[in-house]
Length: 188
Image 1: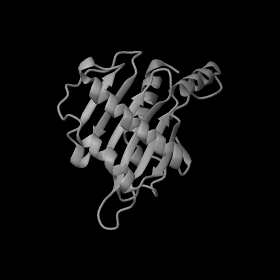
Image 2: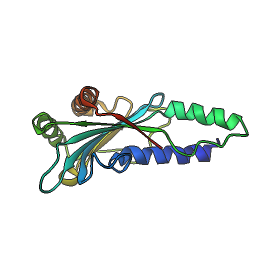
Image 3: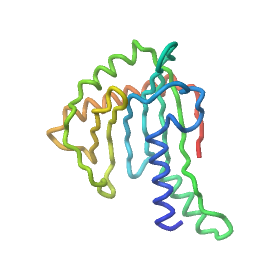
Image 4: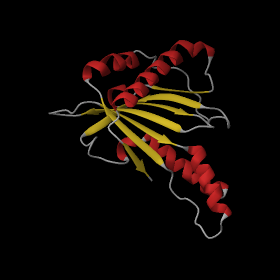
C-alpha cells in the first residue's frame, strides 16, 4: 500500500470516528444527534472517539454513549501484509468497531454540566498535529457548538486543569461503555 492509499484510508477512518452517529446500526441512534464528542488518537494504539448522542423532540430516548475505535496499527499491518502478496488487493476500508451504551439522564447530567463549564476560548493550534504525537480533544455540537479544545502530547501547562478535567470526563465515558455496552458492531 502506498502513502496515498494509506492517507485515504486514514482520512476515511477519521471521518467515521468524527461522525460515528452515521456509521453502523442506525436503530440505536435514529432521531438522535451528537451533543459532545471526545477523542484520543494515540499514534501507536487504536484511535478512539466517544460521542454523547441525545434524543430530540417528543418522546426522547435515553442518551447513548457511542464509542468508535479504529485499530490503526492492526490495519497498517494488514495493509502491509496484503501489499506484500501481489495476488491480494490492498485494503480499501478501515476496520472501525462501534460500541453503544445507554445512560440515564441522572448519570449523564453531571458530566454534561462539567463539560458546559469548560472555557469557551482556549487558543487552539489550527495546523495539523506533529507526526508521532498523540492527539486529544473535545468538541461540542448543537447548544455546545462553542466548545472545541484540541491538543497534542501532554498539552500546554496553562491548560493543565482543563485537560485533567476533560480526561476525567473521557474516563467516565469509558467506564460507562465498559459497564453498559450493548454489543460490538464492526463497520467497514
